[in-house]
Image (tube, rainbow, N blue to C red; front, side, top):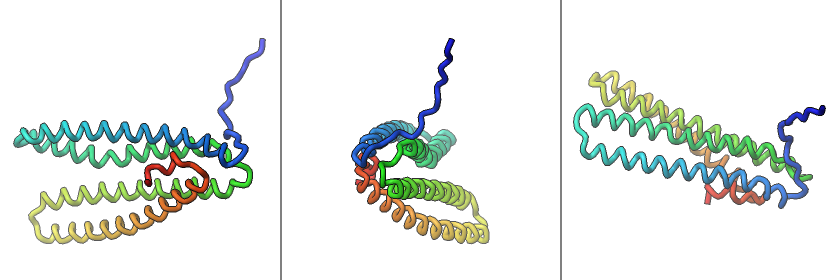
Length: 188
């Protein structure tokens, strides 16, 4: 009796750049569909919350506002999770002969953009918490301290946004050079 073991798929072999593009584009197209579905579901949930908010008063209104804020802050990370999953899929496709350096640079730029966006999301959540504390504080010294912290976070966020733009620009340029059109469609 012969037992067959299922081995994890090795990197998918590619013959040329067109073959590479033919293998990575479906991975990105699938991620694009999942990302769009997430956006549609979130928009539906926001619309539902906002309809309820129009009628709500008192504690019920505060609860709905907290749900809205929580969904708003969680959504970017859910989009990033889809893109990190996409990146893992892209890494399974072997570069075409002679394109190893180009593919490596492209995937590094994609990872950099995702990592920077993740850091930016963390800053946004911290900023939101500080703003919430500001709204609850009446002590002038505490307000001034919170305001300084918010300004520092805003400066950091601005610097990160510039780095995100640079990483995404590199991602776009290298992806276009590789023919990974479905992978750069979110930039267009």
